[in-house]
Length: 186
Picture 1 (cartoon, helix red, strand yellow):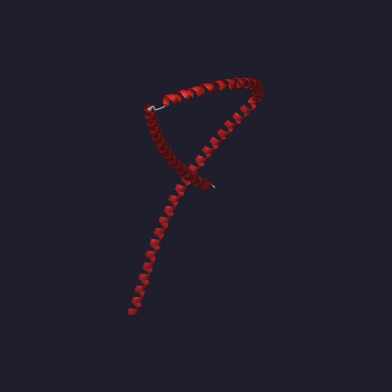
Picture 2 (cartoon, rainbow, N blue to C red):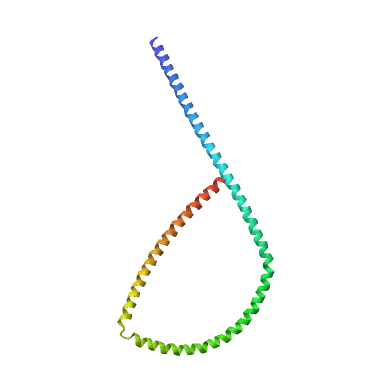
């Protein structure tokens, strides 16, 4: 009897364990079902949002197509007027070419005159600049200012390069996100 009772008790304990495990498994399954239902609901909402965004984008693209088609039509309407204007401009160009040739000849003569005046001016400046300490000091100061300004420009260029790099990274991230979103819809 003792062995029979032990076996029966062991059998009952196993049955109770199995029932407890079954209850726990059932709870886990219900929780998983609830989690999956919530996730499904969230994904459905996201899909609806994406579909709405897609519809909005499609509508905007149609509007843009319509706008550019209208612009294209206007451009075609203006083509004849532009061709006439081109012919007029070609005639004007020929006339101006002749005038330019005459003026170039005049300028060459004036340039010779200016060249001689410049030589006289340069000689005068050279004589005035001899042993002129004040002008040399001002020149040195101006060179220092130019060096300082060049350093500031280099710093600004470095900052601009850093900003460009940040912008490029942001564009890449947005492109990647867009690609992921397009992949989700496909």
